[in-house]
Length: 57
Image 1 (tube, rainbow, N blue to C red):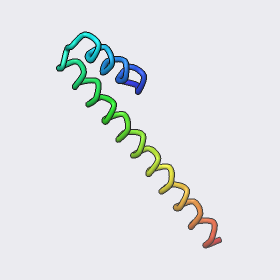
Image 2: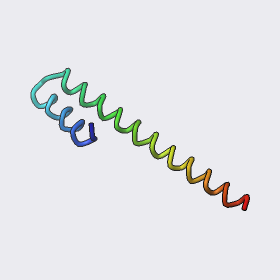
Image 3: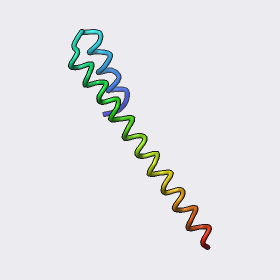
Image 4: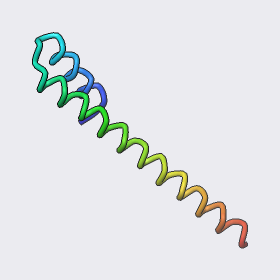
């Protein structure tokens, strides 16, 4: 699920008074943020690894 869908879910839950839907949306948002941070960390680690390879040459 993308961030937009998660946000929409949380907003829809809030507007309709559906606490469960709102909570699911907020949980989904947190999951997306964690997934994005993990990808960023992976990319940074790959960059460091490549940098170290080039320094050894």
